[in-house]
Image 1 (cartoon, rainbow, N blue to C red):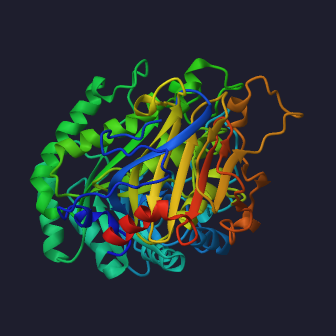
Image 2 (cartoon, helix red, strand yellow):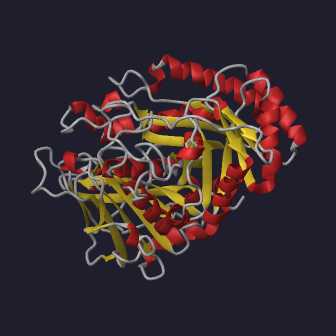
Image 3 (cartoon, rainbow, N blue to C red):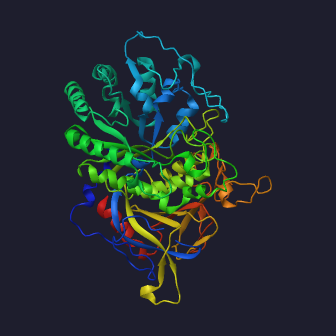
Length: 559
C-alpha cells in the first residue's frame, strides 16, 4: 500500500553498505553504534554529528490519527464540514477507529435498523472542566461502556468521512462472545473494499486459540480482508519510582500472551498491533481523567520531559519486537503520553507537542514500526481538536507542520547525535555527548530535514555549524508573563494551550500555508533553541554546499 510502502524496510536490507552522511569538515562521522537517539547535558554551543542511514520511512504512516469507538457511540457528527476540512488538511493517511468500547458494539447493517439505540450521554466527572460536546449528537448517543448499536447509515457516514478526508480506515471489530463472527461479517459485507484493515479485538489477553478459530472463519468468508491484532497494551507501568518497564509484572504477562498469540496467528495477520502510553496521571502530579495540578512545581512533573522516562517507549518497542515474529510489521495503533483520556492543561497543551515531536523522531528510527496512530483526533482531553469549538490544539499544528516539512513521500532516517565541544581536548576527544537535546534527521532527494527537541528547562542551546541556505521553524508556547505567575518559568509555559511558530501564534487561518507563511530564512549558521521547545530546520540540497551531497545520495539510493 502506498501509505505504508516505505516502512517495509526491504529496500534497506539489500546487503549494500550504508553511506554515512558527511557534513562540515569539523564534524566526525559515526556508524550505527547506538540504538537510541542520544540527547545534550547543558545548554550552550552544540554540534550535530551524523552517522549512517537507518531506514526508509513513510512519515505519513507514523503520524496517523485515531478516533475512539466511544466517540461513535456518542454520535460524533462525521458530516460536520469544519471537522472534515480540518482532518483533510492533515494530509492523507490512516484513521484508526477502536478502543475498549469496540468490545460492546453490535453492528446492525439492516435498513431500516432492527434495533433502537437508547441511552444517555456519558457524564463528565464532577470537579473536572465541563465541555458541551457540540459535535456529538444527543439523539444518537449511547452511553460509553454500554452495549450499543452501530447502524448501517452511521457506519456509511464513517466511510464517507474517510473518503472525504483522504483517510484509509483501520476499524476495530468486536472479537468477544459467541456471535463475534456473525456480528463482524455483517459489517464487513457492507464495507467491501472501503476498509483498509481490521483490528480484531482490543487489548486481548485470553484464549488465543478461540481468536484463531474466529479469524479462520472470517478469512474464509472474506479472503481479501486484512487483519491485525491483538492490540496488546504495553505500559504505562504502575511503579514510577524508576523508568523500567521490565519491573512491572503486568507488562510481563501481556508480553507472554502477545508472544503466544502472534506465533499462533502469524499467518493470519498483516501486522501485530499494540498500544502504549508513557504515564498515568498520578505519576506526573495530575488527576486521573482530570487536570494537571497547578502550579506544576512538583518534582514528579519533570518526568514528562525526562529523557530516561521518554525512553520507556524504546523499552516497549524492544519488548514487543523481541516476542513477535521478525517478519511481521508492528502497528502502534494507539499511543499518547498520558492514558485514561489524558489530562487538561497538559495533553491539550504545548507540553504534549514537545513530547509528540520527540515521539515522532523516536518512532521513525524503529525498524519494524510500520504505523503509529496518535490517540485521538477528537474526544477527551488529549484530542487534536477541541470538542466544543474545533479549535486546533498545539498537537494539531505540530502534526501538520511535520507532515508538510517531512513530506508525503518516503524519506530516509539518519543517525544523528548532539555533542558539546570541549576545547581542552584534542580533535579525537573533543566532544561530549549530551542528554537533554534530542536531534533527529530525515533525508529526501532534495532536502535534509532536522528535528531538534530541547528537554532542558533552564538552558538555551546554540546549535552551531548548520548549513546555509536554510529555513528554520522554531515552535514555542505562547505565554504572557504579565498575566501569569512566572515563578516556574519554562515549566509553566509548557501548559499553554497556544503554540507559536517563529513568534507568531498559530490559529486556523494559518493551516493552508503553515510551512511557508512564517518560515524563517536563516542568516546564521547557528540555531538558538530556548528551554523546553523544539524546531525543524530544512536545508535545500539543491542550493547548499557539496558537503551535503551524501544526504541526497542516500535518499536517491534507497527511495
